[in-house]
Amino acid sequence: MRILIAEDDPSIAAGVSAALRQGGHAVDHVADGVRADAALKDTPYDLLVLDLGLPGLDGSEVLQRVRRRGSGLPVLVITAREGLRERVRVLDLGADDYLVKPFALAEFEARVRALLRRYTTQGAPEISIGRLRLDLPGHRAWVDDKPLELTAREFGLLEALAARPDRVTSRAQLIEALCSWDQELTDNGLDIAIYRLRRKLTDSGTQVRTIRGLGYLLEGVKEA
View 1 (tube, helix red, strand yellow):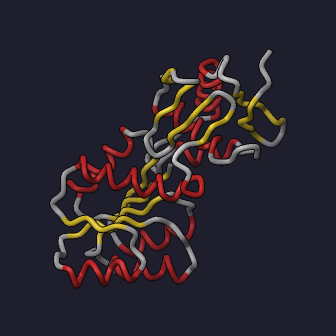
View 2 (tube, one colour):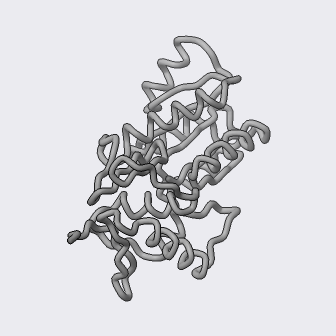
View 3 (cartoon, helix red, strand yellow):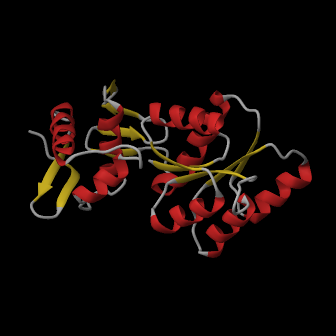
């Protein structure tokens, strides 16, 4: 999943970004509302973590602009502004969840998982392809009942392919899904990740098939 963090407090931004990256997500960070609005116009994200007190453009205005564009992007608001009236106001503007600072990282991660579970794969908690099962928000995978051990990058690759079952995903789409602004993935790095993922999917009833000139396809295969 690719997540945008719009937060002007460097320590909070660093903490939540590190937690999300450790969970296998690609994370971009902006520190003001103008850049947040621009990023949301240019990049397809799976989740927005939004501080209300942003400089340049208030977080409430960023949220309203997202909803006026017709986007159903899940939005988790994190703010120091307390009180029932404020929570009701922000939820009425279109936020999906609300977390008051200071908060525990464990609760933040749980809320992120809940939002992603609600909005990925049309609300389905799992995807099954062949004998492979995926819990996308929980970043877990199994072949039958045996856990599939994957690195964060390998899971991110599998996640990007599984989110488009029976549809071709281009190399550019895979690189975009796996990289944050401050990270880089070379063509060779993508090839290595695909090779390793294919090896781990052996005997899973699922394969990553190359569609020459177009990209890759995750599909179930018939087993003897």
